[in-house]
Length: 328
Image 1 (cartoon, one colour):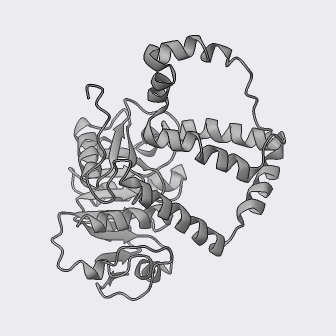
Image 2: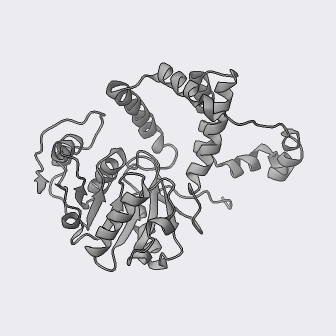
Image 3: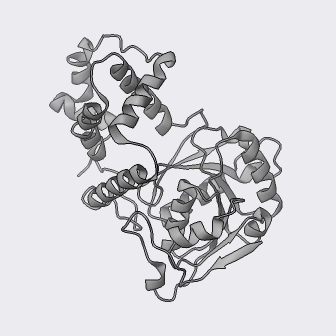
């Protein structure tokens, strides 16, 4: 059974500031998007698409779906339904954000393939699952592509667009077009690889962070502060290769590699999986757990992110930032 959430839907968002769609006046919808999954990622996608003028449908079997949508998308013109086929009918784009389990995604995408037009892209928010596996045996494999955001999608500019071997160029082009229209920076991978690019880099970094905590080199909060005050700030302005160019001065990255880089010969070590609980305990002690801790940390993260988007060249809900031009 479906339910349409009215523009005057009651409820307040737990992490201000949020868009109150009831204040936007009459909206002319540019298209219809079906969001599959009403978790953290799905709700954030829904907020982003709605703010860009899309008519939004959210499908999730959870019994509190209507209440969740009313609370998290105050006044948004959203249709909420547990019936995936109903939500997919007539959609112009699909953004799947369901559980990160291959059998569930295969089942959902089979339903989506059967109830969408042949020109509708089926994009998955998967963080690591290969599009070739998600699309296995699906008659719409040519329309299935990964559209992996960084959390929260409504704020973080990046969307990794990952094609599978069967994905058509038209589907990839359409996904890139949609994400650019949302103000995102879609980065198109040349081919699939487990974890894609962002999460592969993140995994290496997080493994080393866990190792340093396990070895008693640094505690959790100090490591986070160190990253925010150095690498995080640096990589928010220039990427690692561009940073290498600058680190070498006029001689560029080659000079850096031949001098400072030549001394980076130490072993980095790896965390002990058997001691993973020690790191998790330390993180929970540092930051807490539960709804109140999550809301407090999310508000802090979102506030800081919004504060730096503009100065760094990213416009929230606006055009994506431009790539650096070396000729300037």
